[in-house]
Length: 240
Ligand SMILES: C[S@@+](CC[C@H](N)C(=O)[O-])C[C@H]1O[C@@H](n2cnc3c(N)ncnc32)[C@H](O)[C@@H]1O
Image 1: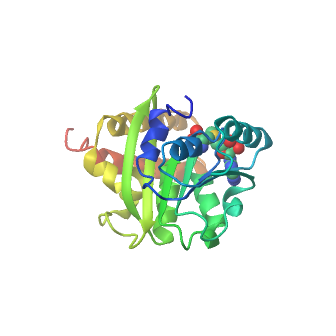
Image 2: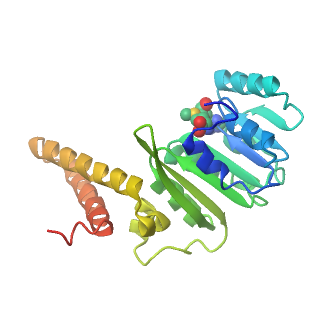
């Protein structure tokens, strides 16, 4: 991967950055994403935020190599603390767990008043991202799920608005699977959830061998509830 040819995962994120939007990429590592969108003339200005020294230095170096210092500001800091209110139109946070993404959004809520779009790409735990968006009045604009190099990735795009939009009565199912992804049910979606089901079955079988603590009992109930949601969504419950 380089700044001309991004991974399919990051190309999918780029698809949702409207032309002319100033953007901030939080957890930018090598700043591949900001360099790409600025070079393509999609974003006139970008911030690359990093909290770790090594990736921060890689971002500084990459921006310098590309000669993009006037358009890309590389900043060291935790989450949205590198962004000033009103400075960007959209924010990307990619390649992390959903819980970390929602913690970053929660910690930087006061920076989001003028942000028109969030493009979030959790590697795991997308439920935490959807719950945060729902509780903070962001509506889902799009969702994508894709497979690359044997891994399945989700991209969640949100805009300020009525957070119930797109969700059915069964909110919990929507949070877990994604309401838009559930409607589409493409191949990566089925691969992901069939894999999760197999994983939960393995965990339950192992738990049967273990002790019967109250904690284990709660965990089993939680897994059974998730399995029911997924089986229903995949219509596996109708096949038996
Ligand atoms: C796995 S990399 C993903 C890089 C790139 N966004 C991508 O999707 O290819 C995650 C990056 O997020 C950075 N990171 C983690 N927590 C962060 C935080 N709270 N604020 C800023 N950056 C963070 C890490 O240092 C790391 O460079």
